[in-house]
Image 1 (tube, rainbow, N blue to C red):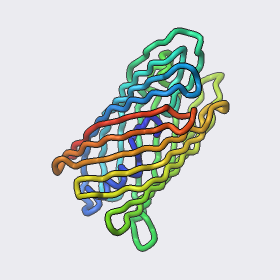
Image 2 (cartoon, rainbow, N blue to C red; image 1 turned 90 degrees about the vertical axis):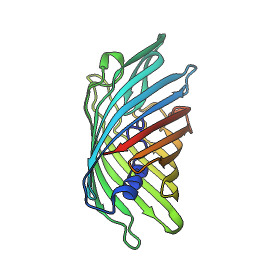
Image 3 (cartoon, helix red, strand yellow; image 1 turned 180 degrees about the horizontal axis):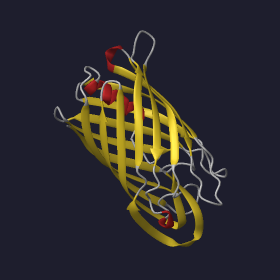
Image 4 (cartoon, rainbow, N blue to C red; image 1 turned 135 degrees about the vertical axis):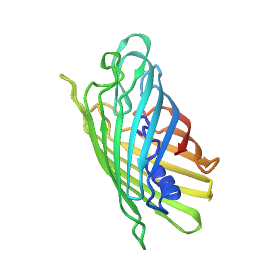
Length: 259
């Protein structure tokens, strides 16, 4: 999920459909959540991350714009850099340190260009830009801009079942003297709308590793959302890392308010 900057894109699209697809009326939404992850990434010591963003969304039936402004804290042995939401170890010889501050701001635009008809699912194209606002000297970012694009699809079936498929590609900005891969990412999952207020989902996520020597991160994730009132929603997520390229686990909880 690249630090889960948008939690799960396909589930977010499904929630949008349930709330907004019936009308062309524009809307605003404000969201915040806390995400904590911990993992040893194949080493002898753990790296812990806290990611706490403020998310502002504005859109209509056919488009959506999102701005994400995060607070970030990373506790790890030695020096590290946060790249595309993952932690890249640079030096494991120094003492364990905690670094925190403003993370990289993310801007995302989504165009819902195909509604579900017959065999066609809902289809959305997106462009995402990561601005280098995190402190490079603290290892909270690379100091470079990343640009990504991709496709999000949601298929709704009878009896309240849903299926998701997302694919994306990111061009990683490289600091001088550093070489990163530009990763492809894929996620696939299924969900169930138990009531108008509840949506639960599970999905598998794979992403190419940023560094050539690391394993491609793989996750199994579970997410649930509950609409407490007409304009308020709460949600929670659990991530389970499936290999050394991923964190061992991650948990998130938050709420959103439609304006």
